[in-house]
Length: 405
Image 1 (cartoon, one colour):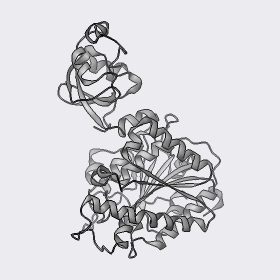
Image 2: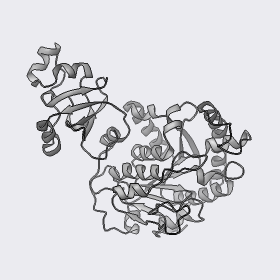
Image 3: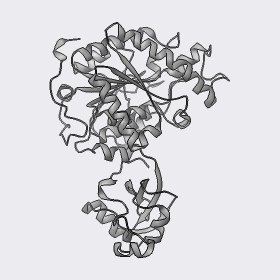
């Protein structure tokens, strides 16, 4: 890799402000990149021996050169389940074996050690140290644990260690059943304040239709905005030993774009793919970041926290939130749905159930039900105490059509 890739520029993406990106070339975007998150999918890492050792060596060689050129690299790696399946002699995901959650968890437990050993040996040839970071969703939804994870990864990067992140599949039932590492990568991008997310997969990028069996399918090299048409072009089909298809990658792109991070989907088994990307070549699909994007805390609220309930609000509150940048007061609430507690995330909807905002409530659902429609001066009289005037303070609220509900 060319030595002129060494970076001394200051980071420009993440929660640093708004940047016009519509007319920037790939070279312009990459010029502002220092901290890179690379997600490597199961389809890239899987081979006849469970793991494609030659591909891992190839990618590690390129990542090592990027590291020595001044980039900070964090990896989100799949492959533990596939490796474990191979070690246990399971040749196909569709066999009667390995279909239950405990079997997948056991396979991950077997395979994770080997996966890290392979990475450690490969990076060790370049005198680089790796660290394993296993996460569950609860590590990210709890704000204190989220910040602890951030501090740990930041320290590892300061030490010149390459963090290799994966879901803790042995205990994460919901993550194995419903989640995927595309989503984990999007969340990790927020944790580390990435300037670029590269998703290496077993396809060349996003096509205008499913390329399998279609000669008319055309690669889309640039996505400026993720429209309904773009979402429709993404298939949910996944690798037999993987979790996510192209649809999950597009959903991840929406999340990181909201945080202001460029996102590239490219073919991970192509020799020199990382060299081509950092040389600014038009390879894979580049999703541009939003010109105006969220700060880290609001991104965490919007995309990491699970919604616990709904607040139905009137037209006056809707106008105050959407057009005037106001907090949500009890007077604007018409109905409460769900059971939730102080600090939980809820969505605000109008009476047609259109989602308007998501935020952290200052009161439980039972208390809000008692004070809905009241003025703030009446809260203490109804509840016996008043900790806050606002049901959701503006600082803890995200107003967006793209929030996770």
